[in-house]
Image (cartoon, rainbow, N blue to C red; front, side, top):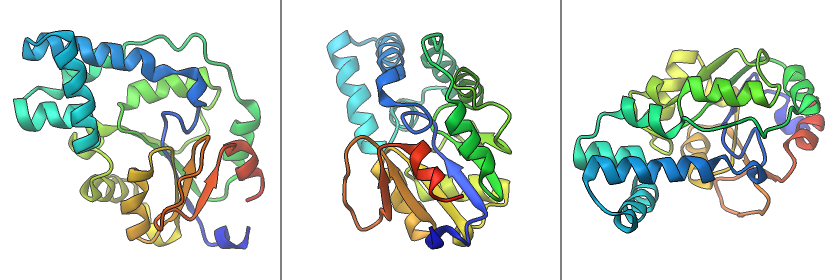
Length: 212
């Protein structure tokens, strides 16, 4: 695609972007989030589930709500919620080949942690093809969709938004990249047409094959 001829920086979200939603990792993560909220805030399961969802909708991550409204230490939370099994995931050699063939610098930027991302990437056979992996800890625990979080990561990595593309499953997390001048690609089973989304794909491997 000629619209991508100037792209030299490729930024990939992790969850439900570099693996299909059918792998359902968040089923495990959400159970552990609820468990942590119950213990940390001394609430029952119903209230913990409500707060988990409410903070995600309000802030972009449950963690941000726990930090901003309850002073929760992010490190134990992140260790607890990402202690999940990835043994059922399958390698994606065709996707690995397509990503490796992209010209320029390739990074992963997730609202999870970098160690968690490394585990998932290894399970998918995508380890060793990215130039860097950034987690929420690298953005001072501020999450996407906050523009400041993107600016922190891009500054650390040397990402130039005008020559960058962002691949994301959460449409909210494409608002700031679009405003910064990036190409935005929504990766999800269903389209969600919005002004800040340039492209949509339900098959990342096929989409990338059209770029190289």
